[in-house]
Length: 486
Image: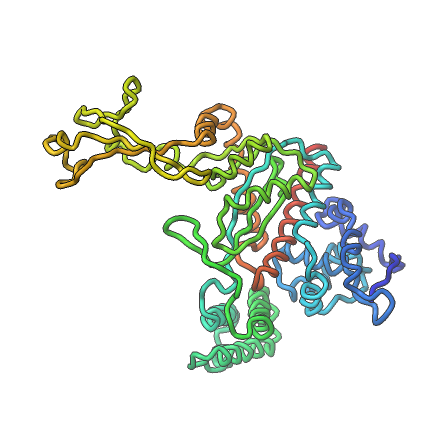
């Protein structure tokens, strides 16, 4: 159970924190910046208030997960560090002499207490609220993009993945003592995943028996990671791969296996909305949701900045309807067409007809294609086939034996024509420059907070990871902005 009253910490050693945790310590600043009581209010119905043993306060459990995201450490390592790092204990509202939790408690907290909690939207909402209260947000623009996160198992078979991680642990051990090769068990020779798990468990046990070696930081990190993976297979996967991850495409020639996080961020680099999907989802389809979620946080928006993926017709119409500027270039196929420059015919505006490379003018034209908002009609120009048969430029233009020769151009919608004009304006070009900011934010998420690879399996786990990581980077950005405005 949890108490429904705030408890006072009466430890005689609390003054130690004033000596060892400086005023400019990041964790001290986060504690002063954020009133975490909203976590208690959100989670109290997940606990019994009057029966059972006292549970670890939900705010403390949440803060453990936040520390895990800030410092990109395993459950075991974050708990281990909280034993001796006074800034951690201060952040966790512990007395210096308090004992720490068992790392397995974090798994239970994630599964039971955070289940069905809209944590992602709630934490983004909280950081934007703080930013607005501190008057840190002046812009009315949001920048949108999607960043990909590889599945934890990244299209390797479960056995291959375990083999790779156990190999990394052994290599880190050999760097300390090569004689350890004689103590490791023989490798599995079957294709059975259960045999590979058994082998990994023996490797883990072998390293744990060597006290002098297991405490080397590089060995300890690899050891804890392999243990978490083995436990994940045994408990979550039932010897299968990630059920929710999907193949997505970064470019025509490259793909990934995992998830996408679709992000909206203001020009002050505070993330205002996020939507987490499987890897194959289209970026542009998430735009309207990102705008609406950003509005719900209290953000005023008049401009959206994004790459070509967001300039589809539905989004242009949505922006126009809501009086928003969409700074997103049209697909070149719409702007310029798919035809090569050397294959283009000249348009004679006086006659209203196209003229071929030999100088022959079309003899008729007709509108083709179905009407409708998602259908682009074409104007088809027909040429005199008898002239085409004897034309000196017919190679590559006229196919021998063809009964007709036509030249078609897509009729651009009013929305596309307006967007083409807008993207040539100085206002468009000035705002488009801001897009680089979200590329830097994606890099920060991945390289400083471990967001390049999923920490667990499934969309539920990805939502939790995304919520904690985005909360962490938003808090760090808020503190940076506060220093800059002093």
